[in-house]
Image 1: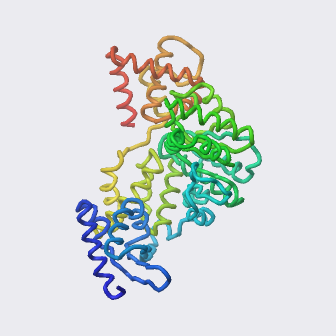
Image 2: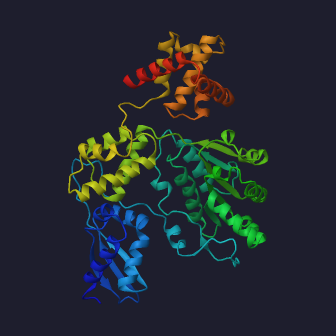
Image 3: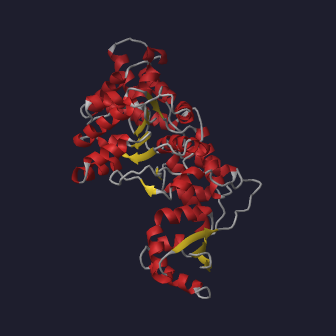
Length: 466
């Protein structure tokens, strides 16, 4: 077979082409070639040549099933697929140079262990903690928007015996790095103590385990989860309204906490903003440490962009990096998506990476803002519109004109600056319930008060034009 593996790969390509869209095939598969095939090491090894390491991640994440199906069909069972790619030449004007991702060798080794399974008899062997080896602290960029959260995470990871921050509840909007941070804690704990029973699981998978346990063996389910040393549950808000699953998690939580086991949770909102949960469970979410991850500031966006470019071996000119960092403002995940699209366009279209290409890629992915809206811009615009001094918003003055204007600031800070309710309250010196009431009051009045709607339109226009 070693003499005709290129022909077999060509047949694989035909098979793949018939099962995906033409655009997908042209973007990801047209330029892939079979570099070598070797069955001399005790197993068959097929090496595919791709453009960059970026393509490896994209192919494995998006097209792994169809690739493996094609290889199995034409090469047979037991073939292991490897990728190779040329190093991207460094450009003196680029922001960075090529660098491999810092992946945890401890987690990579345990990925090959049997998956965590609450219905399999536990004989003390290692199981896959289901942690992503890329989500290390070394790959986690720090800035003022996440410094506190990272410091607490490292404190837990470096000394798990101290339970000052137990449970740890990390919250913030989508794409700000919650999953990366909580997994980095688990990875550091495993690196320091490979025998520690650490498990990362999404709330939906936990719920799926619970549902299966009702039909199989609820005792095995409890025994498994109560044996964990560090339990990391992502997107805990997905358990809202699931009374049976919440009751079960309540008892598991109590057992772990009473036995000094670490519990780490993430959510897209703070416990005070969560609905559909029993009060007794919400009270436990608040027991330890609650920490918020805010949307990435400009410095963090630059650092993330630089890191992702280094890890993918992409040379990005300084003006392109600055353009992306200045306009992709909502989340780290958006930056990663732009990097994926930018590399794909540059490779497929055989174009250099420049601002024009970045603008073209981003036009379909993110909203381009001429300026990022912040709390101070909103405060000044509202004060100017209602002819009020900015200091009055921070006082306890309850005159109608001041109270209404203050509520407008709350509403616009939530809508335009995407600040959390707790962050708005902190800036104005108000508690969470006051901000909730203020935002709701404006929303309710908008449907009946034309002048208020006109005022908001005028203020928003002034902010966007500033």
